[in-house]
Image (cartoon, rainbow, N blue to C red; front, side, top):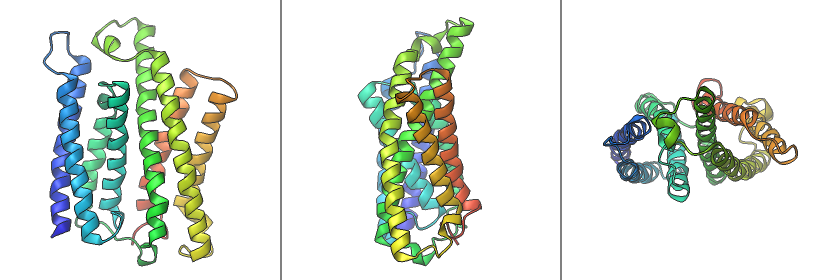
Length: 278
């Protein structure tokens, strides 16, 4: 019963995220006299996030575990972290255009998650432990930060293209400056990287002490993907800090990092068995 309530609440949240995406997209393309306002989009986003949070609570209560016991729950938790960081970034830095670049992806993944409600495989019983929750939480929050950084980089590349082509339309005036977008992207990566690092270290400690993934756990796709993702963001930070690089190259590298995050996360459902679901 609790799981059903969670599914219904998540479906309502998805509708809210659709509304948020529509408002955000309408705002960035409308003329100065258009009817879409940042306030409307933010109110809908907060409403959707509230329903999403209640859905997580219901799913957690139903499984008596962090909601990562199957594919559906894992995507729901992942998207909750993305939405959390998105709302925080919008409120702190006043980024009404962020959701125009981020929410369409959230909606696509959310609709895909609904397809796993009935047929999604369950987490292997040996993985249902406290350490799994402690390991997953910082990684998913880090993924949320990387999602924001990826969206900001896409905004950067879009704004740069607008300036280069001298397309002085509504989009150009509503997107932040290149300097602001680059700085905010750097900050979100700086937040996400230590979270990912902590999550990976806790995961390695847990696996080594418990043997939950067997002797050849390093061959698991999720482990390899997590390490590769960490290396990509380590290189990105090195390029930013040690080489003092900014601009187009860094934006592309940040965007590529988030695409790798998505592939690592979703690839578990297709390729991983030990680290995934059965």
